[in-house]
Length: 163
Image (tube, rainbow, N blue to C red; front, side, top):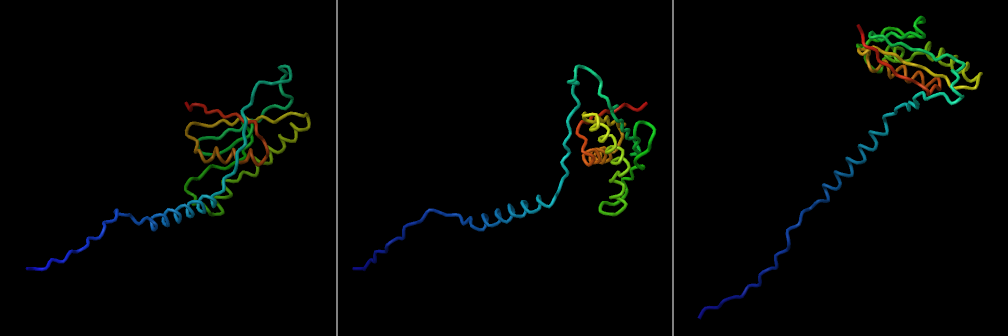
């Protein structure tokens, strides 16, 4: 007679997936994106659209300012005073030429004067920004940043069709 050994079979466990390394990767990516997004600083452009006058329909005592941004990026104040040079999109970001092109100190000074005149008669200054359809969008953003720097919040935007 032969001897038969009875072997005990091990219980089979349910298959498991080791996800601890995947969780580590997800946390590292989360930390990376949290740090990377906090490095970008944006200026807040607090702008409100001009509404109907609330002082019984009387026109505002200070005439609204008009900024025209031409298709080449040059900026004029009230159709007669140049306050910004031609925009050159070929200038590399981060250079001094790029910063000086984006900053519009002449425009900011004119806007601060308008703000002082409006505050003197206890009203809000109103500015209309007119641009050509082919105006670089960055130039409009530069004008909006100048308005925010001058603390002017009532702004109207207009795009006129070129002929």
